Amino acid sequence: MRVLRLCRALALLALAPVATLAQTDAYPTRQIRIVVPFPAGGATDIAARAIAERMAANWKQPVVVENRGGAGGNVGSEVVARSAPDGYTLVMGVTGSHAINISLYAKMPYDPVRDFEAISQVAVVPNVVVVHPSVKAGSLKEFVALARAQPGRLDYASLGSGTAAHLGMEMLKREAGLFMVHIPYRGSAPAVADLIAGQVQVMMDGLPSALPHVRAGRLRALALTSLKRSPAAPELQTIAESYPGFYADAWSGLFAPKGTPRAIVERLSAETQRILKLPEVAARLAGLGAEPVGSTAAEFAAHVRREIDKWAQVVKSSGARVD
Image (tube, rainbow, N blue to C red; front, side):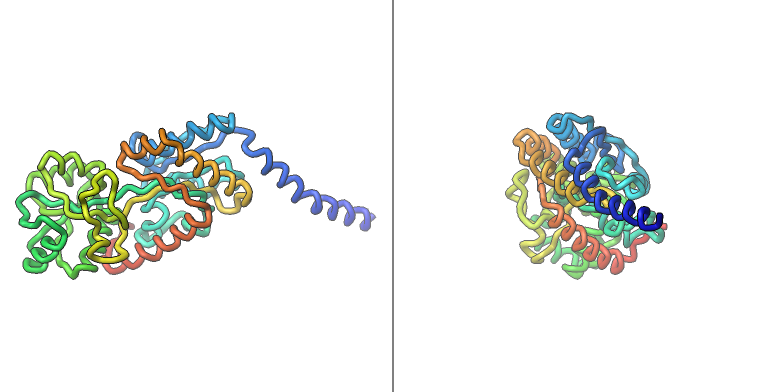
């Protein structure tokens, strides 16, 4: 009897990889859910919906987007981290949720590396350093010289403590040896409004939201946070042209729960890459000021690890913290 049971157990173990392979080959066989850990209507949400729409059309299965905002992206991301690792629940993570928050929050409900499988980086949105027109600096070099000559006299606004825009300015301060006072706001709109009014002198903001004010002459743009110049504003230099390696763009990408079969991760990655190469998707992202990426799973995983290390240093040097 014992021998029979042992033989049955061995047979089941032998069949398990075959069953998993068959399940993977058939994937997807039902609805896929993409959680966006922010409210509807933002750039991350729109990019997720563009991908979901085309995944559904290609795979002939429903792909729905669910908005679960809160705690800088932590709420929605935790939902996915605790979901079954079967490829049917994904999250559109961003710089904050999957690179900054692990160093910023005293208690994190998940680990961005240990609890997730990276699928593909979707897009990057350059940030831009903008100043009030009264600031007597027409370039980044001139601004750095001005700020150094007036330590503590310039106030910089941010979208909120711990955001990529806030910590990006802290990176610039560190690289250029500047001392400026940080004034945090609750989002981009009130910060930009006070910058236009001259209540603060400088801030780092997303290129899509800042560019209309720059074009209208209400603000002056100095430099981008990307490694290369943006097609949306090719005349703008990058901070990296003055400080090599400087990079503080906002990015987004798809993740699955840890333990999702590798074949499913690779299938999702290949599909995401395919979608991001479609001209209509690239045009839609460009309209948001975003640039499509479409990296492999391995490339995206390496990018996330680099970003975690980079932002950890910035959080530590700035003293930023969220309880």
